[in-house]
Every structure is written in C-alpha cells, then in structure tokens.
Image (cartoon, rainbow over all chains, first blue to last red; front, side, top):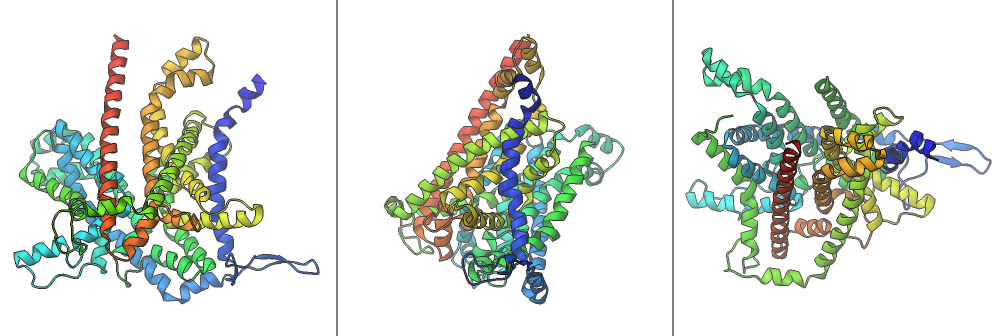
Length: 297
Length: 276
C-alpha cells in the first residue's frame, strides 16, 4: 500500500483538476466542433446527429460544412469580426493612453499613498461589471450627467446622442477595463531602477528623451500585459455592445448570442464560435505561450 | 522612484479616478431620487430600497447567486490548489502540458464561447446519461471550470515563491511529505487561498454570460435578472440594488485587504523574530 502510494500518490493530486477541466472545459470544444458540422433541425436540441445508423445497418456520417460556408456568404459575420477587432484594438490603445500616465503617476507618488491609490484602482474591478456598465448609462444617456453639464456650460445646445453609438461602446470598454491596464503597468514601472534615469540625465538627455530611451522600453512587458488584458475581453464583449451600443454595433459576441437565442441556429452559432477560436483566441494563446517561454529563459 | 508628484501627474490621477468612480457615485445618488423619472430630481427618498426588500424575484435571484458563489468558490479553491501543487511540485507527469493549457485557456477565452460549448456538452450529457438538468447544477459546474483557472494561477505564483526549507526540515524530522506540506507550506498559502476564494466568489457572483447559456428555466441568477430588467430601460429599484451591492462589495474588499495586510505583516515579523 505504502509503496503504491509513493509511486502513484501524486495522481491523487493531479487527477481531480485534470479530469475536471478535461471533461468540463476541453471536451465541450470537441462537441462544439461536431455540432458545427451538423444540420439545423426543428427539435430539441435543435440540431441533427452527424452519425446515424440506417435500417440496413449502414453507419452514415454526415458532415455539413455548409455552416462554415454560410459565414463567408452572409457578410454580417465578416463585418462583425472586423468591427470587433477594430473596437478592441482602438479601445486598447485609448486605455493605454489613459492608463500609462495613471500608472506612472501612481509609481512616482509617495510610498504611503501608493497603497491607497492602487486600492482605488483595484476596487472597481471587484464590484460588479454588469452594474458598472449600467452605471455608465447614467452618465452618457441623453438626460445624463455629461449632457447636463455640457448644456449648463453652454458648450452644446442640444443633448448629444451618445447611447446606442460606437462612442458609447468605446466608453464602456475603456471604463470597464481601465484597471486591467493600470495594474500591470504599475507593476513594471514601480520596479524601474531610477538610477538609469539619473544616468541618462547626467549624460545630457532631456527628460522626454530619457523617458523614450529608458522608461518606455523597460516598461514594455507591462504595456504588452496590460494591452492583452484589455484586448482579450474586449474582443469577445457581449454586455457592453448590447446595453450601450445600437443596432449597428454588431460585435461578434452579440452576433453569437442572437444566433443562439434569437434564431436558435445552434450549428451556425457553433461554427461562429469555432472560427472565432481559430482566428482570434488561437493566435493570442500561441503568442502568450511563446512570450512566457521567452520570459522564463 | 522618487516621491515627487508634478501637477500634471496629479491631474492625470484625478481624471483617471474620476472616470472610474463618477458613474458609480452618480448611480448611488440616483438611487435616493424620489422621482421615478431618472432625469428629474424629486427630492431625497429611500422608497426604492423599501420596494427592493419586497421584490421576491430579486431576493430569490440574489440568494441563488450567493449559494452558487459559495459552492463554486469552495470547490474551485480545492481543485485549483491541487492543480497548482501538481504544476509546481511535479515537474514531469503525463498530461502536464494539457493541464498547463487548460488552466491558462479560460483566462483568454471569451466567456461567450465557453458558455456555448459548455451548454452543448450539458445538452448532450443530458441526452446520454439523463444528467445534469440545466439550472443550479450546470451553473455550478460551469463556474468551477473557469474559477479553477484563476485559483490555480494565483496559488501557483505563491507556491513558487514559497520557501521549501521548512518543509524539508519537517521531513528531516520524520514527517511524511503530506504531513510536512500541511504543517509548513499550507499555512503560508492561506492568504493566497483566501484571496483566490474571494476572487472566485466575485467572478461567480458577477457572471452573466456563462450562466445565461448553461442555466435552464426557473434558475435565474442575480446578474440574469438585472440584465433582463436593465435591457428594458433604467429602473430605479435596480439603482438601489446596485448601490447596495457596490457598497457591500467595496466594504468587504477593503476589510479583506486590511486583514490580509495585517496577517502578512505579522508573518514577516514572526519570520524576523524566528531568524534572530
């Protein structure tokens, strides 16, 4: 017993998480692939089996690649992929633009204040994401705070229509994911060796030059990590385009949802998911795999 | 870095924090608005809070979400800790690559895709085995999968930096490897376990997309109820609910951070005392 435990005991630790994630995380993807190759059917669940046994004992395997072809024929899908990419990319860049100076300022503030400032940045991350998106509506809707202030200042004479536009989607993503950008940036900027900057200034670099030559390259890991943390959830975003965006703001997450719940076309929805996985999640995962390997070495 | 803040940095910080907090503060303000019209200030009132207490749909959903959150985070901490121990302590085993991939994938996987694929699995399982019926069970199973990933990453980094010399000392003194781990390394992991439990709890409590896919009729979590109400427009009782949730979560996080900092300081002080 004891010898067996010594040799095999580690599997008591490894097996539960391995088996759990295998069954409830990885195998579902195989299922989605199978269902993306089946036909839509009017029944519960709404798809046909790809393997069937005919009365004369022939086993038929029917693979319907039409669902994938449909993604190329109907331009809604292509457009929503592109729109999602564009939205995620630009909101990541804007987040970087706001987050970098914030992280820089926190890293340069006195140690006693840093903890509180960090806490203030992290706190919104813990509060409900859905409720924060909803809260943003109170600022940007026609009768919201932003329009009230602008009207009061006399800068505009009619309330701006922000809700149900791309602008609202951008604001939603930036507002929701800004903490994800600030935290990794702060982590790299805080570790920055200040003597390097002093050396640069001793050698005659003006501060902006020292920033470009020293601070910026050294904070690159934080920039990449923060950008990934914003870009990844932004591209698959469903809640923000649905609550804040208009009918034109078709992000891929929303198309998937409508295909699934609205049209009840599970095979096409599965095909959309598989293509999304291959085109977008795949490259991100490969990139992360190699970048962590590089960092380790 | 030096402790010198330029006026520019201060204004950047103020703008950034304003972006993060203004919507929440405005929402809390509106929740005390007597007028049901969100655009008009009708005076101070706690009417919406009173209505909230009598709204059974919301209370049931909140209870369901809390139950799911407790079950999910407890099981996810167990599974995630096992996965972290596997990855840190066992350098070679069959399936290591697979496990590494599976604990990192949920972090980059859009929820909507995880949700769809898990629903498809549950539907097929129900047809084949007659289990699980969509509702509480399926939501719990689905949440555990992605929470385990977050727990693993958190505990893994703590475990990697943990000092193994105490554990080795315990083993030299005759403890078995399991006993030595429980006596020395596990206590040092407790802050990481606590924060990953809290993280799982929040992630589970907050999840809308995955729950919407895998849930069935009759099991609506709090985010699902909120989402369906909010989609129809602004509702004052949701303002009250949101304010309550945000304040409660905020208070818990601040308290947890304070407690964790205190135990961490205590631990460092003990370590210094022990070293003297």
